[in-house]
Amino acid sequence: MKQFEIPAFYRSPIISKVKARRKLDDPRKQDFSPTRLQFSKVEFIIARHFGFCYGVENAIEKSYKAIQEHPEKRIFLLSQMIHNPDVNEDLLAQGIKFLQTPAGEQLIPFSELTSNDIVIIPAFGTTVAIAEEIRATGANIDSYNTTCPFVEKVWNRSQKLGETDHTIIIHGKHDHEETRATFSHSNQTAPSLVIKNMIEAEFLGEIMNGKKSAAEFYTYFEGKYSPGFSPELHLNKIGVVNQTTMLASETQEITDYLRSVLIQKYGETEIKSHMADTRDTLCYATNDNQSSTYALSETAPDLAIVVGGYNSSNTTHLVEILEKTIPTFFVKGADELVSINLVRSFNIHDKTIEEREFLPSNKGLKIAITSGASCPDAIVDRVMMRILELLQEPCTIEEAMERATF
Image (cartoon, rainbow, N blue to C red; front, side):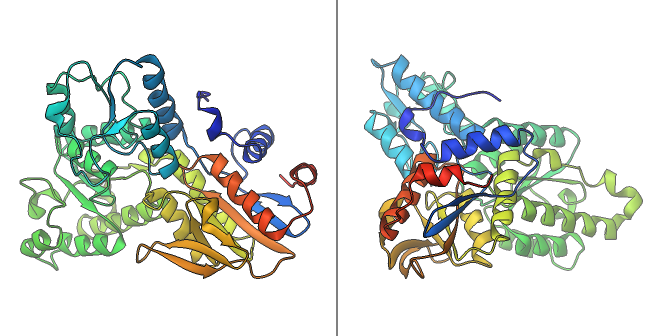
C-alpha cells in the first residue's frame, strides 16, 4: 500500500501507534475486532478501521503538493476537498480559494480563471459539464486532479455497463457532489437513475412490475433521472452502483431486492440477461469502516463517540449503525466536549446541534470511538485527551498502551 506524504499535524501520537500495531498483527485486515485501551477510569474501545482512507490521503497529498510546487500561482479548489472542517480551513489558510460550495453554488465565477491558474478537483470528482467549462478557461485541472480512484472505478464500470445496454441505478444522495459526478458520467453512455434508499427502491420495483405508472415514476423521481429516460424501456436490464460513502449493506439490500423483482418478471434462468453483478464497485474502505463499526457496536459500551464533519455522508452512516443500540454522540472535535456533564452533539435526523448530558459516571466507563474517512486521526486523539482531562484520569497514555488489547 502506498505511503502518502501528509502534513505532520494530521498525524497523531495515540491513534498512529494503535494503527501501526494492528497493521503489524493483522496485515490482511481479517480481524475486525476493536482495540481496547484501558485507563483507570475509562476504557476506550477503538474501531479496527476508521479515519483517512486511500482516496482522502491521496487528495490531501496532491493538494499540499500543488501549494508547495506553485507558490507563484493562484490555486483553487472546485469545492470542499473533503467533508471535514479542519482540513478545509487549513487549505484556505494556505491561500487556496473555493470556486463553489458543496451544493454547487458559485462563489467565484469560472470566467475569472486564467491559463495560469490551477484548479484542484476534489476527491468526490466533478461533472463532465463542469470539467469542460473549467478546461475551456485554460486553467490546469489535470495535474492535481484528486478524484478518488474508487469513484473513478464506479464511473468506468458504469460506462462498460452502458456499452452493453444496461441502465445504471445509482444508490446515492442525488444532491451529493459524488453522486452528481457519477450521474453525469454514467448518463453519457446509459440511461441513469438515482435512488436514495430501500423506500425508493421499492417504489421503483412497483414501476418495474407494472403496479405503478410511468406518470408516477416521473413525478416521484423528478430531477433524478437522465434525459429521455423511459420506465417502459429502461428498467428491463440494469446494473446497480453506489455513491461510495453510502451504507454498503443498504446497496446490497437494494440490489438483492431489484434482482428479486426481475427474477419474478423474467425467471431465475434469465436473470443474468437482465441484471449485472456490480459487487466489485463497492469501496473497500467504506466496507472496512462499516464492518468495524458493527463490530464496535457488539462490545456493549456505555456510549459511543463518532468524530467527523457534520456534512460527511460516510460519517453519518457510522452514526446510524451505532445509535441503533448505543447512546451515540456525533462531534466534529474536542471543543464540543464542554464539560463532564455536557456535550454538543450533531443530530443527523434534524440537522441540529443538541446539548446533551455526557458522561454517565466518572469511573469504569466503556467508550466506543471511531471517525469518518475524512477525519484526521489527530482530531480523534484530541477528543480522547479531552475525555481524560474531564475525568481527571491519573493513568498516562504510556501506561494504557502497555496494557492495551489489540
